[in-house]
Length: 239
Image (cartoon, rainbow, N blue to C red; front, side):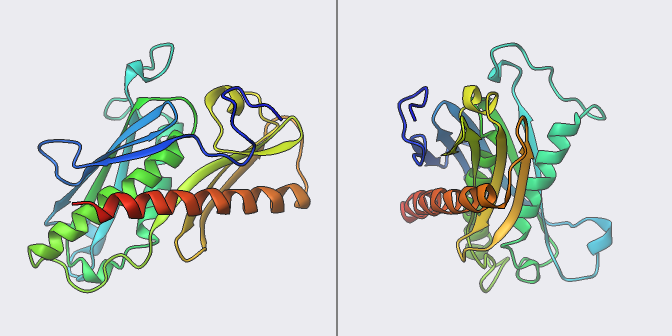
């Protein structure tokens, strides 16, 4: 099938990860997936939430937001106490994905806070945020290790995410906004580098899907995540 941007069904959009993107925060990246662009940064703090005090365990948490001009029509800015349900859901998703690959006992009693800010939204912002946030987290952990504040293997695996969907009866990878808005089925899949699933979010927007569709979509997402993991690894191999 012909996709709006000319890609084949199993093609990712062009992906680029730029590390050390922000001057004041070394553990920061810009991730671009097609026309979706997200800045992800990670900052470590020498404190933990109250429920972890005295546990000798750390914590990883995330915040997500879309700039007002990131969409064609202005998006209302989230304010303290007025975070919409979608934002809360995505923040929790990013945090879960990163905690799934982090050994909290190796962090000590400190928190790594991840901020994901969408500059331009053209579909797949949560997947891009997870994929970029892992790279920022890896840089933050490396910095803590150099400072002697973390030891051992803090990150047990890498994690990345991608969207898949059924469009015109065909399984497609990495949906842009125009595809996502027309899809019969929309899914977001997060997986680790060991091939395990962290999150499977799937919704039938128009036509219910069956087990066969699900099997095809999960396999397609797995191939996409493998490619994203390679991009992450290549970015982290550079100084």
